[in-house]
Image 1 (cartoon, rainbow, N blue to C red):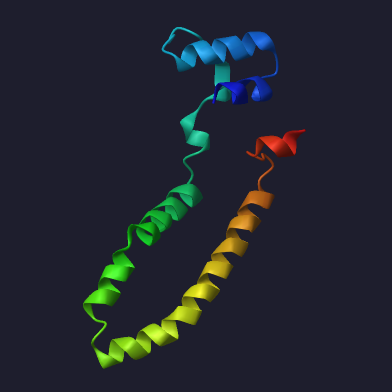
Image 2 (image 1 turned 45 degrees about the vertical axis):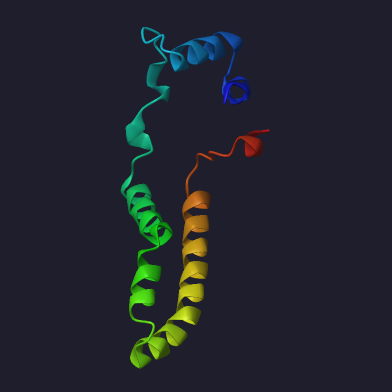
Length: 111
């Protein structure tokens, strides 16, 4: 994490100020560079909530509860390809969102 600061900082003075603020030096002013509002957009919150629900295993618990039901077995066999297609659509949407924004958060793309 500390090495990232030296790659991202415009100069060494800013890097030292940033690192000191990481370790509790709260009186350091970093200007307008660290506002959480620029990261907490509606798109981010919605996709983050979807990711939490998808990663939590709630859908697997529901499937296990009804796996003996014949209707649910058929529905699950139909929903599996749909879930793969949905994942592909989400990948395309996320790629479009990343390329639409002018700011690229990946550090290696900035060299």
